[in-house]
Length: 455
View 1 (tube, rainbow, N blue to C red):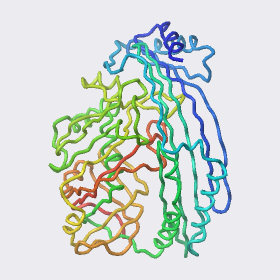
View 2: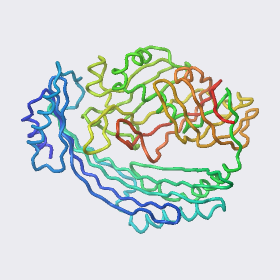
View 3: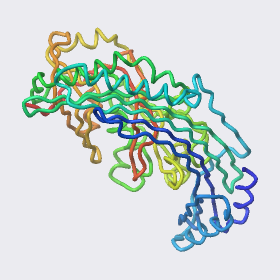
View 4: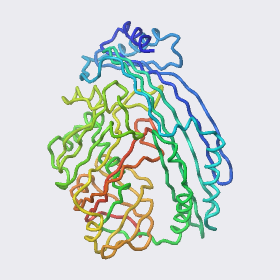
């Protein structure tokens, strides 16, 4: 395969060219309420050729390797049409041939379909029977074994296996015209075991959805909020991580100034990293989809902006080093700058000490959704609790946090030492490519004077 890809690239009339060819084997099972809504499997293959001519990019998407030379010629011709002045791409690949084989703790391909269906059916039954207020459910399982073959005109070649398994559990409760939802999800790149033994979680999801029907709305106004590790991680990813992606930065002079390296960016104990080689998580890859080895990048270090995330092109345009963050969701898509495993580093406080500093506030858990626009954000917690005198109190709903990300980072006045990294279902969306497998995480964070929408 590598020789075939390199042979075609040798005929490329371009300053740079690469080929990514993939096979993708998927299976899915999904319930919606009592109905078994989807059972399916698929096997796809195909790829994309990219070429760069005087700074202009062209591509050709293909399904088979039958006319690879023709697709290379087509990508080069497309690039020549939009050629500009000169090609600027950083040096970042690892010349040579590399093979990265997945090492699985329990391979989902060795588990029978009947066992998978029985597990999903059991979880769905638990949710539907857990409380009279439960009106519906959504329980799904999916598996994906993706094998990527890559070669570039710089002599970089790799083959990498990228498996993933996902379980999603959701309950819908309703009463008196009100509807509430609760959910949990799990994902792994190495172990089908994350799907097993989730009966207690299924029951808790249903009970929480029902309890939210009776929970009061959070009071609006400015208050102290403690972010649970999952909410803290999503905040780091959505509100700050996307601002660190250099394809966004070099096209936005204002944000480039706001995200200048060396700028103070929060409390002195605050550090945020993106690490594409962290363990064997769903966001972990040995190489990005331009053949650059992934690495750890400090985005904020001790309260100071320390790094950006780059592709070969953005690194050259901003005069920085590539970071291995050019990623694509699959065949037919070209790589764009994306996060991998993004997390806030642990701080100095115990969880108890962090909560003890809150006389009256809110504890925000999970993430229901939200939006960002430049440095402004609005995020909704999945659920939360009142905090009184350092103790967690009653369940509340409709916690909506809004503000400026830079001001919010400076408003963090407590960072606990209890970091958790989350591998959840779904993934990151950007540029029409979703869901991209990523992880996020952090410790508990205490943030002062947060604007909370509510009653």
